[in-house]
Image 1 (cartoon, rainbow, N blue to C red):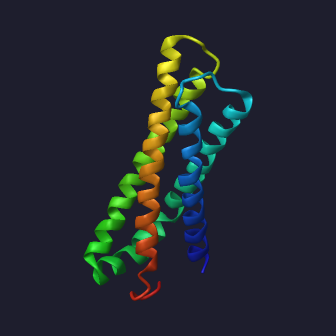
Image 2 (image 1 turned 180 degrees about the vertical axis):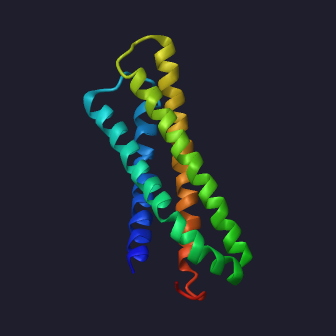
Image 3 (image 1 turned 90 degrees about the vertical axis):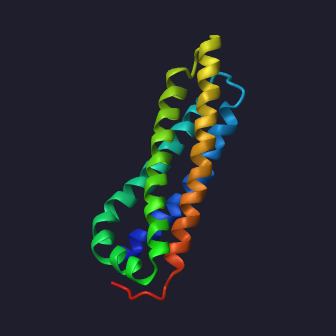
Length: 151
């Protein structure tokens, strides 16, 4: 029951992260210096994405011991899709953290290099958003497989 609640929270934060990651990609696309509100948005996006990833890490051990084996026994393809989801989630958090650091490091600078770095951050956020949508879709698909026994 508690694991199911954490799984649900993880999924909802994942959806929120997928949507939130699109905002900094849009804000940074022109490379302009960030306003205070934009800095808050970038920071909040990193927090939401980190919470989704952190919840996934928190539930990973009991999931690996209980649910993952049953999932592979029920449908190997779904098991491998979930393995793919786990690896893509790591790419999402890595891209998000890298883009956040780059965006904050150049937030107020007005040099051409800072502008290019912010554009790169926008591209990294965009890639993270697309990957996060894939992660959410794979997680939703695997969670929808209710035919295998519950832990």
